[in-house]
Length: 178
Image (cartoon, rainbow, N blue to C red; front, side, top):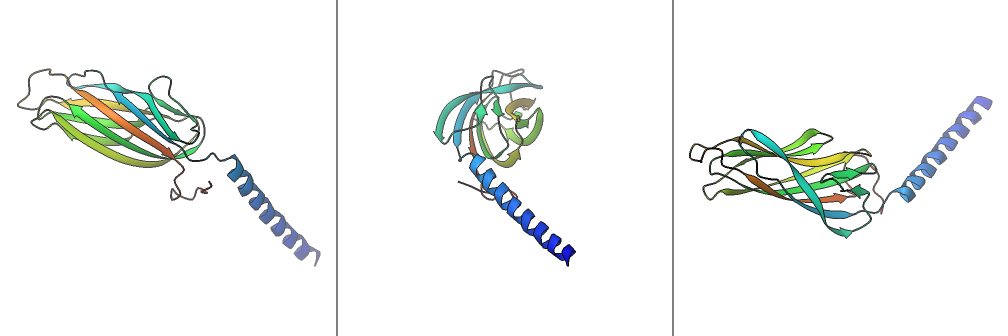
Protein backbone atom coordinates (compact mmCIF):
# COMPACT_ATOMS: atom_id res chain seq x y z
CA UNK A 1 0.00 0.00 0.00
CA UNK A 2 2.77 2.43 0.92
CA UNK A 3 4.65 1.45 -2.23
CA UNK A 4 1.60 2.27 -4.42
CA UNK A 5 1.19 5.66 -2.72
CA UNK A 6 4.87 6.42 -3.26
CA UNK A 7 4.65 5.48 -6.94
CA UNK A 8 1.56 7.61 -7.49
CA UNK A 9 3.09 10.58 -5.68
CA UNK A 10 6.34 10.17 -7.65
CA UNK A 11 4.36 10.12 -10.91
CA UNK A 12 2.38 13.23 -9.95
CA UNK A 13 5.55 15.00 -8.82
CA UNK A 14 7.36 14.26 -12.12
CA UNK A 15 4.33 15.34 -14.15
CA UNK A 16 4.22 18.65 -12.28
CA UNK A 17 7.97 19.10 -12.79
CA UNK A 18 7.63 18.56 -16.55
CA UNK A 19 4.83 21.11 -16.75
CA UNK A 20 6.83 23.66 -14.76
CA UNK A 21 9.89 23.05 -16.93
CA UNK A 22 7.89 23.57 -20.15
CA UNK A 23 6.41 26.76 -18.74
CA UNK A 24 9.88 28.04 -17.76
CA UNK A 25 11.23 27.16 -21.23
CA UNK A 26 8.39 29.03 -22.89
CA UNK A 27 9.16 32.13 -20.83
CA UNK A 28 12.88 32.03 -21.62
CA UNK A 29 12.37 31.30 -25.33
CA UNK A 30 12.78 34.36 -27.51
CA UNK A 31 10.14 35.52 -29.91
CA UNK A 32 10.65 34.77 -33.62
CA UNK A 33 12.90 37.07 -35.65
CA UNK A 34 13.91 37.63 -39.27
CA UNK A 35 17.19 39.05 -40.57
CA UNK A 36 18.44 39.75 -44.08
CA UNK A 37 22.12 39.66 -44.98
CA UNK A 38 23.82 40.60 -48.24
CA UNK A 39 27.31 39.62 -49.27
CA UNK A 40 29.60 39.06 -52.19
CA UNK A 41 32.79 37.18 -52.85
CA UNK A 42 35.87 38.85 -54.16
CA UNK A 43 37.14 37.83 -57.57
CA UNK A 44 38.06 34.15 -57.50
CA UNK A 45 40.15 32.18 -60.00
CA UNK A 46 39.85 28.62 -61.30
CA UNK A 47 40.28 25.79 -58.73
CA UNK A 48 40.16 28.18 -55.77
CA UNK A 49 37.59 29.23 -53.20
CA UNK A 50 36.80 32.39 -51.29
CA UNK A 51 34.53 33.25 -48.38
CA UNK A 52 31.42 35.33 -49.03
CA UNK A 53 31.52 38.19 -46.53
CA UNK A 54 28.00 38.80 -45.19
CA UNK A 55 26.94 42.13 -43.73
CA UNK A 56 23.82 42.94 -41.73
CA UNK A 57 21.34 44.34 -44.21
CA UNK A 58 18.17 44.69 -42.19
CA UNK A 59 16.22 43.34 -39.25
CA UNK A 60 12.57 42.83 -40.13
CA UNK A 61 11.12 41.81 -36.77
CA UNK A 62 12.00 40.31 -33.40
CA UNK A 63 15.10 40.47 -31.26
CA UNK A 64 17.72 38.18 -32.82
CA UNK A 65 20.40 36.44 -30.81
CA UNK A 66 22.89 36.80 -33.66
CA UNK A 67 26.28 38.46 -34.04
CA UNK A 68 27.67 39.49 -37.45
CA UNK A 69 30.93 41.29 -36.77
CA UNK A 70 33.38 39.36 -38.97
CA UNK A 71 31.30 38.61 -42.09
CA UNK A 72 29.87 35.37 -40.68
CA UNK A 73 26.67 34.72 -38.71
CA UNK A 74 27.27 33.70 -35.08
CA UNK A 75 24.38 32.35 -32.98
CA UNK A 76 24.33 33.19 -29.28
CA UNK A 77 21.65 30.65 -28.29
CA UNK A 78 20.21 27.32 -29.47
CA UNK A 79 17.86 28.20 -32.30
CA UNK A 80 15.58 26.58 -34.85
CA UNK A 81 16.35 28.34 -38.13
CA UNK A 82 15.15 28.57 -41.68
CA UNK A 83 17.95 29.80 -43.93
CA UNK A 84 17.08 30.97 -47.44
CA UNK A 85 20.15 31.57 -49.64
CA UNK A 86 19.83 33.24 -53.03
CA UNK A 87 23.01 33.73 -55.09
CA UNK A 88 23.81 35.22 -58.46
CA UNK A 89 27.11 33.94 -59.86
CA UNK A 90 28.94 35.80 -62.63
CA UNK A 91 31.79 34.29 -64.60
CA UNK A 92 32.88 32.80 -67.91
CA UNK A 93 30.17 30.91 -69.77
CA UNK A 94 30.21 27.16 -69.26
CA UNK A 95 32.23 27.31 -66.03
CA UNK A 96 31.20 25.30 -62.95
CA UNK A 97 30.87 26.76 -59.46
CA UNK A 98 29.65 25.78 -55.99
CA UNK A 99 28.22 27.92 -53.23
CA UNK A 100 28.35 26.11 -49.87
CA UNK A 101 26.50 26.96 -46.66
CA UNK A 102 29.03 26.21 -43.93
CA UNK A 103 28.30 25.37 -40.29
CA UNK A 104 31.36 25.63 -38.04
CA UNK A 105 33.62 25.07 -41.05
CA UNK A 106 31.72 22.05 -42.44
CA UNK A 107 29.55 22.20 -45.55
CA UNK A 108 25.89 21.43 -44.77
CA UNK A 109 24.35 22.53 -48.09
CA UNK A 110 25.87 22.77 -51.57
CA UNK A 111 24.42 24.63 -54.54
CA UNK A 112 26.00 23.64 -57.85
CA UNK A 113 26.02 26.26 -60.61
CA UNK A 114 26.91 26.18 -64.31
CA UNK A 115 27.23 29.63 -65.86
CA UNK A 116 25.03 30.23 -68.93
CA UNK A 117 26.11 31.89 -72.19
CA UNK A 118 25.29 35.37 -70.85
CA UNK A 119 27.86 34.92 -68.05
CA UNK A 120 25.46 34.97 -65.12
CA UNK A 121 23.38 32.34 -63.34
CA UNK A 122 21.15 32.32 -60.27
CA UNK A 123 20.67 29.62 -57.61
CA UNK A 124 18.58 29.30 -54.44
CA UNK A 125 18.38 26.96 -51.47
CA UNK A 126 16.16 26.62 -48.40
CA UNK A 127 17.56 24.93 -45.33
CA UNK A 128 15.79 24.16 -42.04
CA UNK A 129 18.01 23.26 -39.09
CA UNK A 130 18.24 23.32 -35.31
CA UNK A 131 21.59 24.82 -34.37
CA UNK A 132 23.41 24.80 -31.01
CA UNK A 133 24.58 27.90 -29.18
CA UNK A 134 27.83 29.29 -30.58
CA UNK A 135 27.25 27.95 -34.10
CA UNK A 136 28.90 29.88 -36.93
CA UNK A 137 27.21 30.07 -40.36
CA UNK A 138 29.21 31.20 -43.38
CA UNK A 139 29.14 30.96 -47.18
CA UNK A 140 31.95 29.77 -49.44
CA UNK A 141 32.21 30.26 -53.22
CA UNK A 142 34.21 27.62 -55.13
CA UNK A 143 35.27 28.04 -58.76
CA UNK A 144 35.55 24.37 -59.73
CA UNK A 145 36.05 24.16 -63.47
CA UNK A 146 36.66 26.53 -66.33
CA UNK A 147 34.29 26.00 -69.26
CA UNK A 148 35.50 24.86 -72.67
CA UNK A 149 34.58 28.11 -74.37
CA UNK A 150 35.80 30.48 -71.64
CA UNK A 151 38.93 32.58 -71.43
CA UNK A 152 41.83 31.14 -69.40
CA UNK A 153 41.87 32.28 -65.76
CA UNK A 154 38.82 34.51 -66.17
CA UNK A 155 37.65 35.59 -62.68
CA UNK A 156 34.26 34.89 -61.16
CA UNK A 157 32.15 36.51 -58.46
CA UNK A 158 29.08 35.57 -56.37
CA UNK A 159 26.52 38.02 -54.95
CA UNK A 160 24.35 36.43 -52.25
CA UNK A 161 21.28 37.40 -50.25
CA UNK A 162 20.59 35.39 -47.09
CA UNK A 163 17.38 35.45 -45.06
CA UNK A 164 17.65 33.89 -41.59
CA UNK A 165 14.42 33.28 -39.71
CA UNK A 166 13.91 31.72 -36.29
CA UNK A 167 10.91 30.08 -34.71
CA UNK A 168 9.78 27.33 -37.03
CA UNK A 169 6.79 25.41 -35.68
CA UNK A 170 7.35 22.15 -37.53
CA UNK A 171 11.06 21.49 -36.97
CA UNK A 172 11.42 18.15 -35.17
CA UNK A 173 9.95 18.02 -31.68
CA UNK A 174 11.03 21.43 -30.42
CA UNK A 175 8.24 23.25 -28.55
CA UNK A 176 6.74 26.19 -30.43
CA UNK A 177 6.05 29.19 -28.25
CA UNK A 178 5.23 32.78 -29.14
